[in-house]
Amino acid sequence: DAGVIQSPRHEVTEMGQEVTLRCKPISGHDYLFWYRQTMMRGLELLIYFNNNVPIDDSGMPEDRFSAKMPNASFSTLKIQPSEPRDSAVYFCASSFVGVPYGYTFGSGTRLTVV
Amino acid sequence: AQTVTQSQPEMSVQEAETVTLSCTYDTSENNYYLFWYKQPPSRQMILVIRQEAYKQQNATENRFSVNFQKAAKSFSLKISDSQLGDTAMYFCAFMITYSGAGSYQLTFGKGTKLSVIP
Image (cartoon, rainbow over all chains, first blue to last red; front, side, top):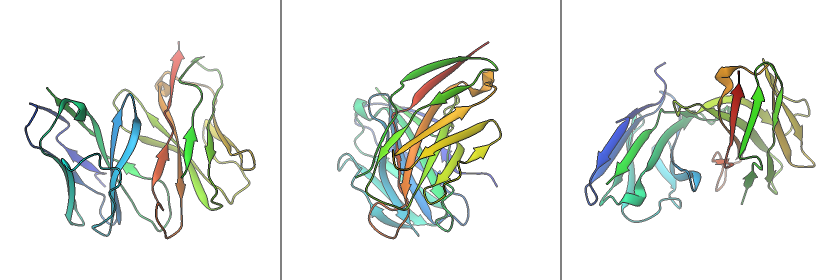
């Protein structure tokens, strides 16, 4: 099992550019979560999916953020246009609801917007 | 809404000693799970231990154990025989488990930075 795979590991972009973060969950997991981690706010849930359907996106900070899960093995988080305050580590995590062992996290994407 | 509070932003412990990290939470739910996650400098989030609220017995995983006090809504982590590799941020987290809004979401505390000193 390769775990949750996120790409890229690091991303540096200029303000105003579009940024796309990618995630491949663990096969068989039916929940997928996107979190953002900053020093000031800690770990914040942005959005989560169940069986590829978005369930709660109330944590998405603005309309500049969007997330999709076109199939069970792939999800994207897009920021358009990006701003310096979007700089953070973005984590994807997946879980199987049958027994809540907690999530398995990816290694995160460190986004820097300059 | 559920909240998780970790009152110790930073702690340090001598190698081979024992340290306890504190966590309190607030919820009106009765069925939930509690977790401790470790985040070393590599930033990978690693599950350390979990506790089911309906179980009175405290969970244990090798050198890691918890003291779960349901009535007090307290969930502390004890690390015995601390090792240099235990140096990391430790996050307490809470999950409700029913089919409704907010279910299966992890709510995290702000974390405790633990340094193990040689």
